[in-house]
Length: 411
Ligand code: ASP
Ligand code: MG
Image (cartoon, rainbow, N blue to C red; front, side, top):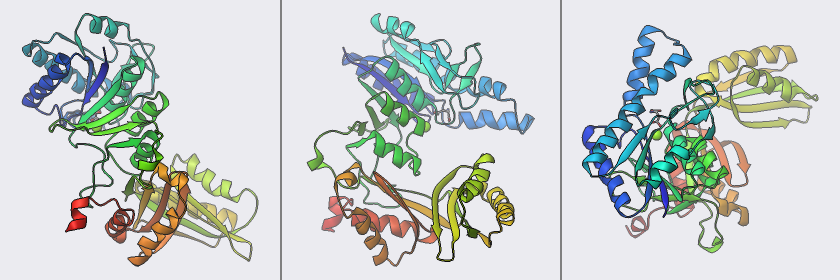
């Protein structure tokens, strides 16, 4: 008998009626003969509401108590869903993360799952019950409640699927799958039938917010086939899995990802000596500022220029640090720019095709878009451009790589 883990996000369980609709969906799968474990989020808006109350009391509330508080959102949903399932004639049992022993480390607010003891769940499944587990939460070795970071219910679902060796992990959400790019930017964006873990990871870390990044890492590591599908419409969704062999069928580029969350810093005229990159970037990292794209170049006069990007929220702090470093190293100047955007083309097909970068640069050149930085990985090419050209760039690349929906071509 196949075992499926289903996860329903906040919007899917946002009202009592919606919880009842989820119960109908779960009941339908159960009647088809599947064994089912269901992980749920808090009702939409609930986690934010709880955080808001805490902040009214203390701007920086104690992290342990924060986890006790925010984990209640999911506890509400599991109980209501089990009641709704009972109405459907389905025997179901709800469990908090701690009860099914989702053992995590003790990093409150961003805990990592160490181990899941599947015995209790397996016993229920064998008895024909549906098991409903609260997403987003676990408990540490001492029994303290922990949470896995915002969006963490995705990770709960994938971790349960991995621990129970489920045949598939289905993530039900308010979109019907993963798209070639954001349909709000490109109306001709298309739903992908399938995508690999690596591609999804690149898409997610480049700004596509459908799944928590950690859940995709987890799914890839344990090879759990993930399917993103809509709670509100029927459809096959998008299957995220390991790369298969039919290279022939594969598009060179699967999707275009972008984000506007970054800012660019440049330090010029650094005397080029061993260790300067370390001095510059080491100091930024030491301040816990995450660095993304990095480019270094050395001019004829032996002075180095280093450019890198950070999250926009970190720009001010990073700029201050960089000015200090420039003084210490005797560098000429520091430049900060927050009107940038990052656009990436992503596709495992790139590995076996030449000329992908040229096609990308040509599409941007045709629109007169200047490229400020370029970085590549095996399955991704990223450019940093001026923010105001972002949408134009995404549309140009989407059609440049033949990703536009076919009906649009006829128009
Ligand atoms: N309720 C949590 C959040 O809003 C976890 C989740 O929904 O995945 O982030
Ligand atoms: Mg979510």
